[in-house]
Image 1 (cartoon, rainbow, N blue to C red):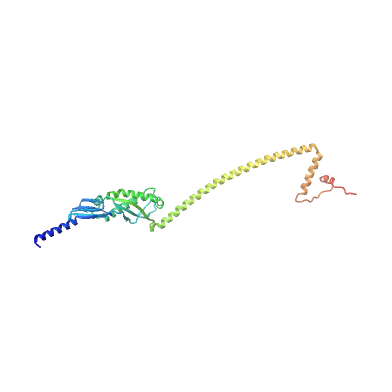
Image 2: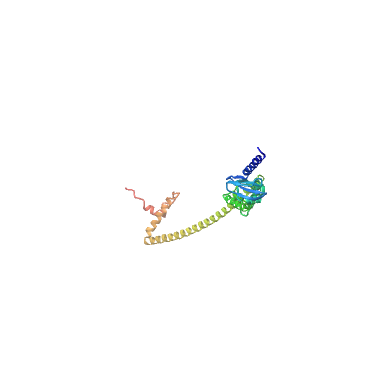
Length: 295
């Protein structure tokens, strides 16, 4: 083979290699930047075939899938001063690769994790330590609203890094080991104080009810006694009137009636034995009532 032919083969090989090196493939799970001397020349966000200048251009690939990050455990102090240990699970994605590259440089996802962790650390402390946010709220269904607040605040700051915070979830929310006993004792003391206050309010209410009941009882009893005395007086007056009328109409019958009442009272009493002279006036009607013995 002549020298010219060899040169032609070499040139053809170089052209072929250069042509292959000028092609690159963009996967559907990624986005691509083409850099030339550190400057962005192309942005490829759609899957397919791309072209670059061999040996001059550099292809930098970024994951287009949702990424995850677990934050370290941090201590927060809610409004009720019960310190809690909290960590979070974050899902995010690279939304703007140009802004992402400009903000984080060649650090990529590793630097993004560091920056995002700092953002979340500050937002978790700010939201969970805000006025009106107690440990009970953090441990209650209101937790979802607090997580959404953290996500919203983190999203605002993460946009400057080209990131989109998809979701934030608080995972563990525990009391620090060294504060558990003190917190438990404080909770017990608070519950005992609440119970004491509740019992005091109950006793006060019971005293009010008892006082009202006693007053009502006395008023009702007094009214009943008054009515009873009035009725008894009216009855006595009526009885006296009837007896007076009866005595006036037939004095002998009235004496007989009173004697019978006296006999009944003396016989029906606890001591039915009478020690009395036979000719006593008390026995006048009893003698007259003695039946005659048949001859």
